[in-house]
Amino acid sequence: MKKFVLFKIAICFVFVFSCIQFSVCSVAKAATNKNQVGIVDLQSGTLNVRSGPGVKYKRIGYLQNGMKVEVYKQIKNGWSEIRFKKSKAYVSSKYLRIQLRMSMEKAKSISDKVIGMQRKTWEKNYTKKQIYSIMAPSFTTAYIDRYFKQQMRKAGKDKSGTQLYHIIETEIWGYAIDSFDWEQKYQMQKPTISYYKKNGKEYLIVSQFLLNEESGDHTSKLYLSKSGPNKNWKVYKYVRRY
Image 1 (cartoon, rainbow, N blue to C red):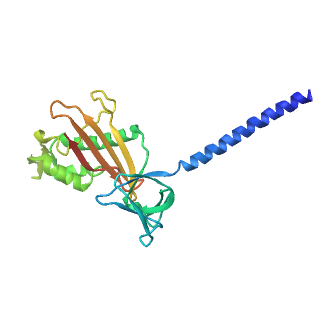
Image 2 (image 1 turned 45 degrees about the vertical axis):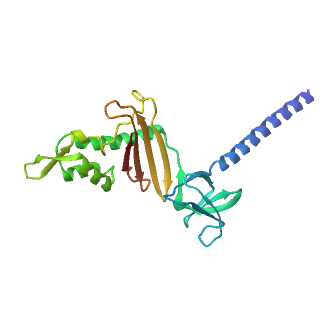
Image 3 (image 1 turned 30 degrees about the horizontal axis):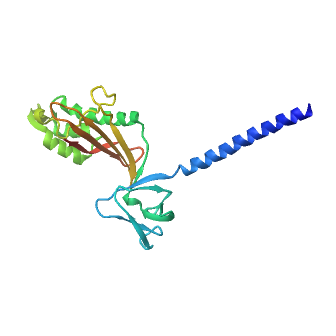
């Protein structure tokens, strides 16, 4: 009887020890997964890799535009710790996109909101001030300037004599944003999203290849950014490639 009891105690001990060991390994694995992925983002040239966090440190190599690196730490002085040839090294954070995660549902909500806001300006005649007021919460001023210049035509005056404007029907797809087909009701490919942080700002890119017999098949790409957690997402660029 005692042997049987001791055997059961031994089995329980092995089971508990295995659970603890599994938990410790899981925590350790989770800790390593906290490292972020950075993508080199340059207009031209290459990114210097240095032995320390500053330009005074020795240059030990370089990275090409678009290369991925694992970021272990971002330092307040604007430098990021990476691994270069299996050794600790540093690059300027200014030229790194830190990849983040966002659900498709959230990206859809953001893009639907800005598209709906823009299309409100199609509903009737507005003054220039009214058009800017409608779009300002979700578009940069530079984007609204381009949109107004290309998309709007004069459409009479209001009772006070202020000039009114209306969307140019024949030029509606210049800076006017395509609707994305998130449910794939009409399109073969799903929208894709890229969400990242660079220089303290968050960026979101939504893209989809659209089949369109009328205007031609093309890729529609929407660029948004926001400068802080409590700020609005704003469209700063829109590209349609045929």
